[in-house]
Length: 310
Image (cartoon, rainbow, N blue to C red; front, side, top):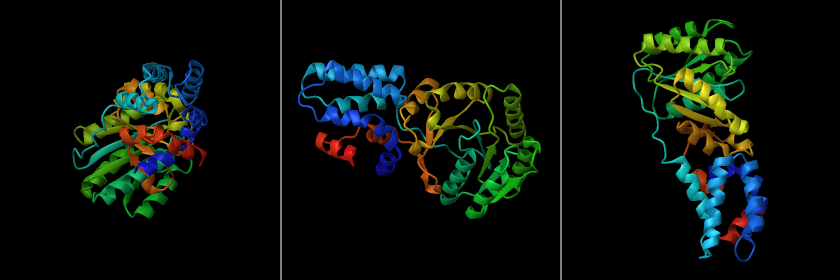
């Protein structure tokens, strides 16, 4: 698992490891100039101003003490403190348990729906997919391909059909088939478009009337490349829908992995899953310890320097 996090966060690490490689190889303590350079690199990797300030403050404290303390370990401890404990994995709350995937266009909701279906099917659960993105050209076809590969049921409507109607049909089918989980792929929408957000709110009402307490989980899918700008997206979705968790996709292709820490801290919502690739198994349950370890590894300086070169 650690290797997957390590490989997945390669671009984020490389953003500042050219500097870390130099700093780790220097004899003696870091100079003020060294720390200022590191501060710029952390900001560039989208750790955010607040988190970067805490990291730099902790690193300065360790270096000032001059007791041979490990500033990498100090940075890792700050990241872990910001992230908090490992989040509890979502539980099945009803039959079916209804999960909404929401977010802006291009965040990776459809692929994430398929990855979640694969994971839950492998856990022995009966999963039904609801293709409620009836607006994006090819969205239904894309989910249909995933459904065929997975060998599971799916409910779909016509192009431009009312997504709430598709959802209602999907809930009826989930009950008929006694599905454990209904995963709802919704259309991407800008968080600033009030009419589109109202459509999602309508779907929430339809789900709640059909299954008490539904949707039981509403997860915002965020593209890691959005970086710190994702915070405003998440605020608006949370205000309208009452989010219960976050999924951060495309972590393997971003240099902005530090934003994940700021997003979780700012919103008070747990990051439940992160996407580290295109395959079904590349959706990992988020582990703060392994995330921090992949960013600021527990290694001897020489080993870290060699890894950065490789």
